[in-house]
Amino acid sequence: MSLYYDAVSILTAPSSAGGSFKSRIYNARNLKATPAQVFALIIETSKWDILLKEVIEKADFLHLEPKLTPLLALLLVHDHLIAKKGIAAPSAHPLRQAIERHKTRLKAEFVKARVRRRCASIEELKAVVLREKGVDTVSEALYPRWVRINNVRTTLDDQLQSTFAGYQKVTSLSALAGDERKIYLDEHIPDLVAIPPGIDLTSTPAYKNGEIILQDKASCVPAYLLLGDAATKWDGDLIDGCAAPGNKTTHLASLLHSKSRVSKAKLPAVYSMDASATRAKTLQKMVTLAGADKIVTVLQGQDFLALDPSESRFKNVAGLLLDPSCSGSGIVGREDVPKLALPGVKGGSGNSQGKKRKRGRQEPEPRPDSDPDQPLETEEEAPHQKIDVDRLIKLSNVQACIVEHALSFPSAERVTYSTCSIHVLENESVVSRILASDVAKSGGWRIMRRDEQPEGLKKWRHRGIRTDVVPVPNAADKQPEANPIVNLTDEEIEACVRCWAGDDEGTGGFFVAGFVRDCTRVESISGKNGKHASDASHRNSTVAPDDSESDDSEEEWGGFSD
Ligand SMILES: C[S@@+](CC[C@H](N)C(=O)[O-])C[C@H]1O[C@@H](n2cnc3c(N)ncnc32)[C@H](O)[C@@H]1O
Image (tube, rainbow, N blue to C red; front, top):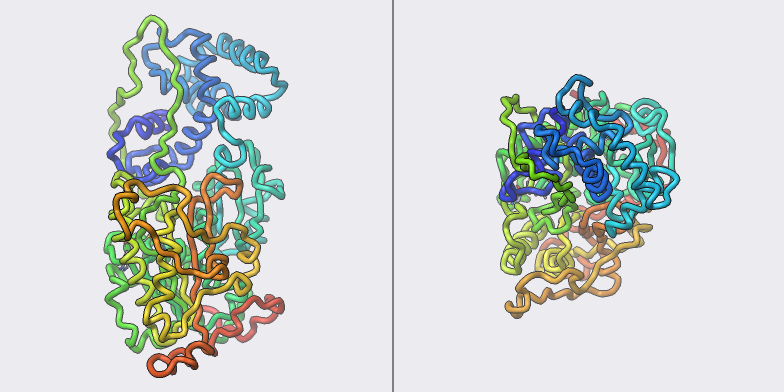
């Protein structure tokens, strides 16, 4: 029963609580039910709210049940009428009884509501209700649960035969509609699958053991772009400069790893850091849980900008992943607490929806990856802070600095830059500034073209833009900084990877660009950094997509050594 009270407490929490709606659930320390259950209940109820309101009002029983607030009633009636297992509470529980006392009326009104809409099945009814609500069933109603398979601990095949045994394979995201056990194997990112959002994996052994990681598809692009299709052959060390809570670090480890790697050679080292000591603790936890601690060294509370690229331990760093703080404007669910249509109470009962029940509860330990990217926002990313152009300009200055610092690592040959922002000012404009910087020019850096990207990403259709799709508030007053300068060629724009929330790809808004060192450029530039660039240029030249990559081709690898 705590599930319903948990959902009410989330929905009625003050808006100043901060964080995206989803992140607030996953970060809430006072929930008894699992965050996934609470999230699914709220989202599923929000899809049906107008119909449930109609049914409850016509059944006209709220004034008879003082324990039921309109919000509680909506959530409970959802499960009573629609959820496969009914209300998640023992049959003697007073709230369950408060609903079941009226089950005949509720059932009758539900059937009438369906007949009025001329629907033969519940699925049909769901689609009609969503249309009434003006929701596109594929884009908004269906935001799948993305699940990344962690190759450090398991394989996709193992998971298909264990955690996902009995799941029906489907070939499109839209086919995941409903609550049935279906699975979609992603066509762009290796070892990524999607399942219906209502399915809770948090109690599975695979989740608890770090074999699977819940991570939005868009957030999987940077590590894949950095290491490419032949990631198991990558032999330079890596840095994840802005790493907490650790989704991309553990993704790097997963890509580098393959269960079939035969122990001979040493795996590359990954230095993973976060300037926030608190967030770095979560990073360490997630790295350990994912089994990546054998290759990942977490530098807790380390400011990436304070790293000295000439330090000897970084001499073999060939790839750097930078995912710095951003406005978070692409995060799905930001300020998106579903506004549920609540039933009215005839006869004016005093049970208000905001009334909170006092509960003494143990605080559950949140899982670090429970809401990839989203739960552990930086101070800068807190949504209650207004997104305005001044803030974007500040963020973009730091973003550019961070990537330029990455380009100065002597053996670096690939760098990725990513944000979960939709603004040109933080994305294409930052790329444009980076490419124009001295460090990029003298180091021979250029953008990683679309035709050089891993196979899955070559196929990805959303590419860079030059002008904001969603205008930035008060940008018009701030000339000229508010007008982002995007001095990129068409080829460079095409090289930028964009993801958009609300389309049929099921991702949040995201931006990624890769930079590579081009030794021909550096040779044409006299003086500094030329040697570094050519040092770097040979190492991972084999990292380009390689069709011959197979389990058999990995005997030279040494696997993990303790
Ligand atoms: C968007 S989050 C990173 C998410 C992470 N890449 C993941 O996939 O789980 C940005 C992080 O960068 C960190 N950060 C910001 N500036 C930094 C800096 N100069 N050095 C190190 N970390 C920094 C913030 O504390 C924050 O945790």
